[in-house]
Image (cartoon, rainbow over all chains, first blue to last red; front, side, top):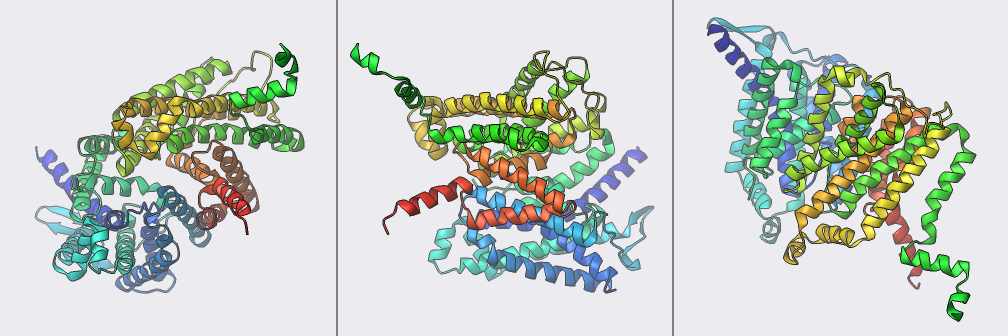
Length: 290
Length: 332
């Protein structure tokens, strides 16, 4: 009985930490897909860029962890802003096959570029002493870094939720997701809204990618290798919301951890089966608009 | 009587061509395939791969370009066909033609079963479901090590000579002609489907599904039939590559396989039957060249090439040709 409880706590803890990473990376994808109807398969590349940015700023420029993290996010936000203006906006409302071709092209370019600059080996992330090691809580030890991940996730989810529900910008995003043409008619500058949302989503992905290197190693094939995970979170959660991907990330994160604990020989099979079942039950995802 | 006498051979050919809507340019890919056999004798192995992959892209065009089903999981059927043919050949049945038939049946069955479940939805949901079907098969193939060889790939395939006479040679001559012949049969099949009333109703479903429902067309059944045929063709393509390479790896079921065939088709042009021929040839030759020049970073260049296509050649190569033709016709 004690073993069972201990296993359950362990699964819940690690599942929660994985869920936070998945959520941070996927929420931007969900909002941009809901807002612009854009199938951005290359979203994971921004997460990977965050990871590479963090290791490079820490390893080569010897910046402290916090500063390097902020620096990495700023770089990715600026890069995504430029990419949005140069490439993505050409294809808004266009043929989805063109979007697939362009974003797959971006993925391939990041694979080549990452191999060129960092080589094929996974980049290690060294968190500062403050958040490495173990935390004693009651009679149990918890890895400090993963506790830090969960804490970060909770803070950001709250912040995002407040931002979307309580600010003028959030109201504009919600209006544009619900009815783009009406939002334009009443004078919302949707072009600017798209650019800001895209940059914000990419920044969150960079944060998730940098912090989540523990779960999703920073390798050149990152964007393609983890694409299925990000898309599952978006599709199961439903497009265009921030609550949907959160619940989906919790579900997928804990289920993945649990299945890998209970039946490691079957790998990710159960996650796919679960996704299939949810999509058959609710084709628009758990919180999708009807 | 007199009219029949005047029906000289060229006129008969003309009548045949008109009846089957054959146009002169449609001979071009086959003439080029024939020419390539003699001009590039050192590249026949690559040529065979290209021909087999064209069949894969053609099968995708049937569902994507005609029935409007956007899928990121077509490798599920390619891989099923490849593993079926591979497992047969590794376990004492190396007869290639029957291997193709069994592979087509297995892939078609997977297409029928998964299609019956997932073809109710559209858009992102359908895309995800196709992707998940392929991912589940990949997981199964990865874990069933005893049957599939798992991550090491399936080894020990022994493919017998075609018709007991034509042995697969080191230069890929037999493989090239074998793939070309099978592709031609597949092309004739897809072509006749596309021009049939059934094919027309698929186009109708792609263009306006609500109206097709309204005129009483059995939309889901039509989609399912197209999906099953396409899956079987993709299975044949996988089996061809397995038999000619004498190896099957997990990559046959992977997301990259599904993604690249989609990319090749978009580069050529979707829904026009010949986009598959142009796109696959362009992509695979580019990939071969880039990876020879720059074996480590060629992904970067092929990605750049794809973005150039999106910016400068919307609608793929066939779209580009169509626009150029319109430009020339327009009086200046």
